[in-house]
Length: 189
Image (cartoon, rainbow, N blue to C red; front, side, top):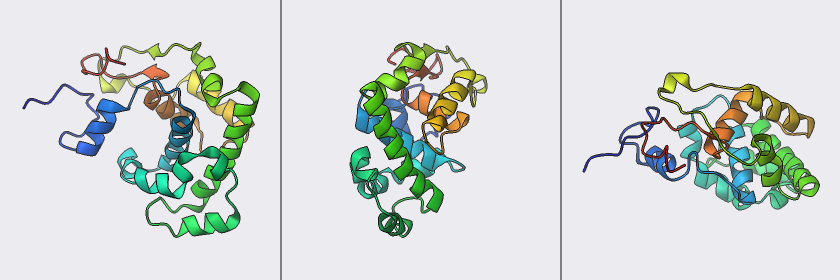
């Protein structure tokens, strides 16, 4: 059976990556738990490949209370020490600690804006930016908008939210459509 035309960055034959691209990447997110999952995983990815994080997503789901920010915000230093020994996740002390800090900041945004979704989508006026990318070489690592969102999140207490991480989050969560115009998912997202 012929494979559909995907974005160039998807490794052919990697079923996990193909499923992620085909079913999730670039689909507009509006669910609070999914938002927290994405913030947590994008931060965990810093300095690593997305494939590394994607392969451990189920470990993260188990370790971080099904990505419930209200639970993660209450994690204690003992919880963080336990997670440092969990082989199902990336055992970086700073990334584990930032997940707790980011959960607390996430809850504060929910209190202020009603939801994280309302907060983040206001940066694009509720409409995904369609970049009409023809070649993967056109994809930016960061933009003025990702820099602005990063700055705002940092002011609100988030960590591991630099402009490159935030642009990856924007792509994954559908704030921008960076599927190649030749990709079968371009029109769908």
